[in-house]
Image 1: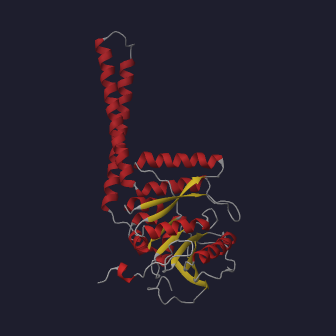
Image 2 (image 1 turned 90 degrees about the vertical axis):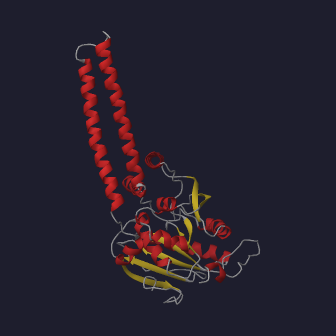
Length: 348
């Protein structure tokens, strides 16, 4: 069997020296009711991609929107636009996974994931695609250098990143805006973690990651749907990817807490028996409290250990297995009504 590299023609260059891929890319964009922003984004993408002479298919994942306006795409370069209608609202991360299953069946070199509100800027794609060509096996991730959200949101976002670092030992410093080689997409789709949180799954996959500094753009329309509750769920989803590591760290922390209580008990008994400094009942109170805390910690450690072992032994669903069950229909709004280079039922 020939390798993929033997089938790839030399990569052409543009006039300004930027390496360009001859093969098309797919762009996956999750949408929930934010169709005005989506239209602005697709128009901006068409402009940027035409300047790069980069062939492209756009996949809009309708994540159970309650509004379904007619989507009119004002494009002249993008090859095709698909709207993948989901039967139910799966949430942002799982909608992305469904979109990746569709993109993986197209004849593309790379898959781009970006949000549909304009905060992920199309102009940053030129730098990210150039890096993906120079390092074709790496995942290129946009790293925000500046955030402009309200102070309250940024405060809780820092708490989320601190909690993630504390529980997992890893630092998450990028979001969903990334360029993924299609072979890496197929790997991620076989990873249960990608069903919950893409960025954390990419970190756990051990695929090479290259970070590209970017600035946060301004929303095209409306208000952000990322409120406090959504941020908490987002953070919990990220930590769930490292559930085994988090439980192990909690287990070790619990044992350390029990060890501290044992030291306190020993000191309390020593002070009571060997000195005259202890007041009546003081040692009994300290020892009793420490024993109670230690017993409660042991119960908590046992539960954590049980959950850890259960998680290690159970078989989790992957996006590749589950995504097809949630697709209601695939609507073509631009380009060809069928793609002869796609292989499979999801893309058709």
